[in-house]
Amino acid sequence: MKKDLNRKTRGINHYLHFKSDFENESDRLFNSLPLFYRIMYLDQPNPWVNQINRFDFIRLATISAEFEKYQLIQIAEFEYKKINPNSKKDICEIKLDDFFSSNILKSKGKEFTVKEFIMTLGYNGGIHMIPDKNEEKVKILYEELFLIQPDFCFDLTKSISKVLLDIYDELYSLSVGDNNGHSPNVNYQAIIVDQGKILDGILFDKAYMQFPIRAKKNKGIHFCIEIMVKNNSNRNLIMSYGHRKNDELNISIWQQKTKIISKVSTKNSNKTIISDIEDKIGEYFLFEVACYPNGKIVCAINENLKSVEDLKDDIHIIDGKVILGSNLDGNEFGNFQEKCLVIQSIDKNNYTMNLGVYAMRRLNIIPQHIPYNLIKRTL
Image (cartoon, rainbow, N blue to C red; front, side, top):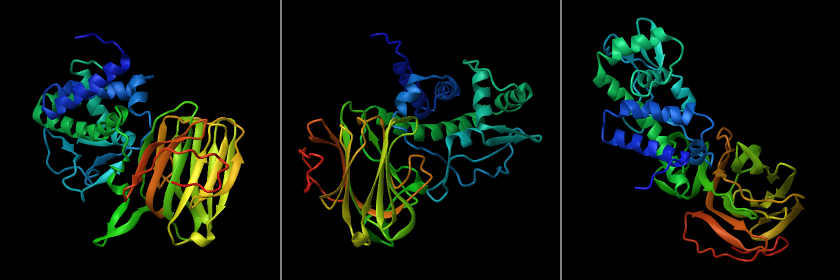
């Protein structure tokens, strides 16, 4: 077997070993969990962290709704919090950093966080990671819990590992080529069926879906979305594209009253286009934003050109995500129904190529020639 010391390759191998130890319920999980935590959260800069989450997907830790309550059962004079939910109704979703900093164990008036449990595992195992400076708490965990109740500690290690694997299984699949849309967080899923009836479009209401976009040098990006909106006086987020740590290209589309507002920004310039949709409120219409490599920004409605602006800056596709229904942070939402989203690249000769077609009906969209000033534009 060929030896490989590439840091990205070794990072992926650590992840795969961690996943294997979990699935096989191997005692090695006591080492692979803290090693994975160290690689992903302590060793910086880390090229594999950037690689596995290169699209900047939002993912939340899925835990039990009873997580905030200590269990009445005491083990080795410890109380503990339940992590894994029993059903889809027993769900709470929190940021991963909040999960690591949450108290998970309590004994004799002292509380211990998820991070402290992981670090103590690593320090007293084969990794010898230096834990937080509170050596007394480390000693209590090791002598009064680890040595006395290893079976319980293994179950807790599995519960923490499952939270991480639920997140990183998806991010790993994206890093190796998965191009599908994702809305895995239960509390933020869009609605397809309401009161037993299939909706004519997917309902986004405090919901989002994320789609990976892979960088393409010297190519612009083209979005077509079929949506229905109501007259909304507040900022009604429809779609965002970009990466929160890369300001080379960012695109946002939102509704305000009877207008659709599209903003495109790069490091050097930005442009905002306002499109009138007064006669489209309450019905489906096709909205198009095309950003050409030469900086031309186009908006069209129902395949008819409405606006052309010049960003006066070159555009190229960056690694990032399209997030439908929210801003890039996933904390500002819209309310609308959507039937179709088409994402394409545009080259310097104005030819398109599909990056993703997501629709409730079968579509056969072929690459086509669409100059920025073409008045009648077809999909």
